[in-house]
Length: 191
Image 1 (cartoon, one colour):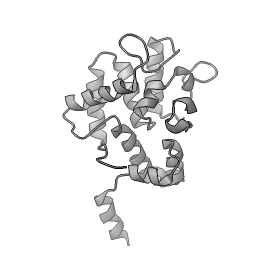
Image 2 (cartoon, rainbow, N blue to C red; image 1 turned 90 degrees about the vertical axis):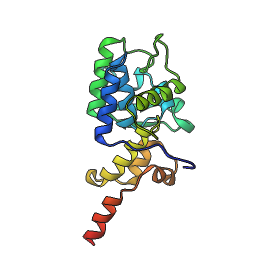
Image 3 (cartoon, rainbow, N blue to C red; image 1 turned 45 degrees about the vertical axis):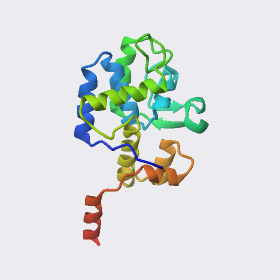
Image 4 (cartoon, helix red, strand yellow; image 1 turned 30 degrees about the vertical axis):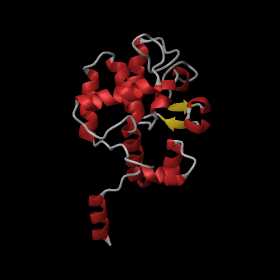
């Protein structure tokens, strides 16, 4: 990725972000937006365009996957993403207070939030908690990096992360993954 990359957040920083978002108007919606980024790796435009039909099962309940349709994904590269339990709980809570139809991320006026409003949503939250260098892409980059560090425990490979991220090229996925100098030191110590 050319230029400066969005910073990756650690667990305490994510908790701080979620705490900040819980104190703002529409705390349930805010939590879902953040978790769609950090627990599913969705882009701002994908969060903006995500409809309830893509997260509900045939019975109308929050399902076990996100069926991201080609029409909302970058370069029409849709995908199916397993639902993280924390995200599923947040979606269930949000569905209880809305009708579960139309856009998941609704604006103050009830319509779909735009991609720019999602970008600004994250910018305002990061500014409020004093995190610099973080953008709406920080959640996606955190998701991909964490997945890369854990994929071996699930018996997967970098190709699985590529599929979850919706990248056509494995090289694109690799650019998202941050290296860890402490892990490098431990690795050398094992050799």
